[in-house]
Length: 93
Image (cartoon, rainbow, N blue to C red; front, side, top):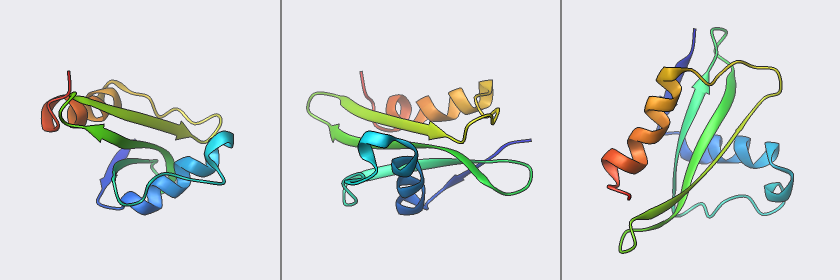
């Protein structure tokens, strides 16, 4: 069973950055991001989505995600939640 965590943007962004080789050293711009974490049944953070580089005038937002290898985290509910933020809350195109 999966659960979702919000409000821990920096922790989740660091987790995601460490799983993306080209992002490990620089990470994400800490002052301008929002993140969503995916927690497994044992309470471990197994995946995360980071929303960054939002341009409200253009209606675009970048989304970066990463997960631990071999973990099944991409469910219908995860997809619904990961796209709710950019399209419903930020009104991206």
